[in-house]
Length: 494
Ligand code: C2O
Ligand code: CU
Ligand code: CU
Image 1 (cartoon, rainbow, N blue to C red):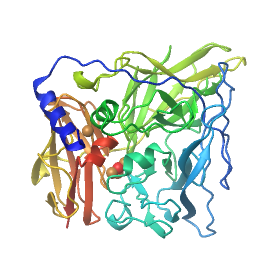
Image 2 (image 1 turned 45 degrees about the horizontal axis):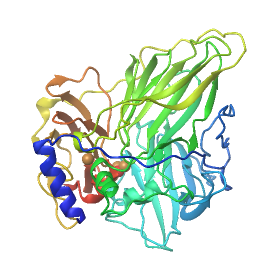
Image 3 (image 1 turned 180 degrees about the vertical axis):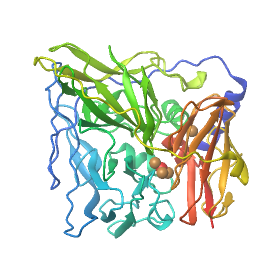
Image 4 (image 1 turned 90 degrees about the vertical axis):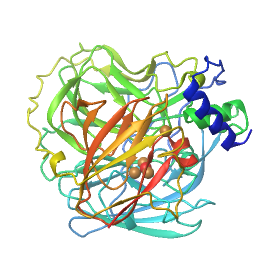
């Protein structure tokens, strides 16, 4: 059965809905990414694989700024094969940015000019895509601009006013994005405003990923022709091992009464996280494109592939106690390929309260910023994008084709309808949009997004303004196996 056949069969199955076919996820291994040597500022990275995890902050390193110019961040980034120890007594061949998994964090301010000197030390082409940033198409690191093995490329862009938020960078070569991210190439971008509306809080950056390893430590990529290969291709590849910043079940500390600011990135190929913190309610303050206008209380957060959130975690627990951040069951699957353990909650990390007496909570402002509404009455075009299984509007990606053409300056409404029985997180490059409604239900509050999960058989409408940056942009499903299969299209703005 070749790949094309597998997709054809699944498309048929999804429209007819055969009874569930049982299958087994083979995997029983545990371990943690060991800290790797690198030249970047080491914040604190510590392996923890024991039952009683070391209580250490787990944030990735920050890229060192080598510029002495004001409002300029100049960094050096390389992608290269590296060997690390993921399972005790074994090694795993990975790909890493600057020798680290996750890659080091790019930190900058709104208005900064960013210069990234990138070098591809892989044996295959790659790119660096700056997911979510509103920057020129030439700097986007899309499949149109591959960097050949051994070659360098400078990515240069300026961070827009109002863009403060959490973004990420990852490879985007034609048909190989999933394989390269799955081998370890992903890192976070934190854009800060000149003046932050939130009071100074302890920050935690949590990059979520998962993987599947063989008993010898090697990354387990099934034969595409096998049953598991077919399942991976259709579900998107999921692994049993859940990592936070490359570590399995690390621990964070908090003091009773303290409020922390968590930035969370979903860098998984296909796993969707329904996040909840035992005994706590989040204050949801932002997502893909930065802060909301007003904080929102949230018991749980659904974080689809490539989405980011900012949460305030309030230390309402007593000193000395602990709570788990969990991934609760979320059924994004079509019945024929739904994993049999999908319904099991999984612990991602432990929040450990220090024994110190409680401190007085800080006051969080109830107004964070203004997000001007894009006005549907001013939209000049409405497009319908139909998501099938592995296809958009009935076809797969062709780099030589332009699927949608938009006028520079235009405001458009995109109706994204999912006609199959599996969720597809839809991502647009280069432009942040606002969700108008989901299945006709108006979005309760405004925010800037670059990815929106479109659940099975649902329709989401978004509004976007192509205010700048002509060129060719991708839009696609961010389940990486779907994207690599060609569930992607080209938008030309001019
Ligand atoms: Cu995370 Cu095409 O992007
Ligand atoms: Cu992107
Ligand atoms: Cu998809």
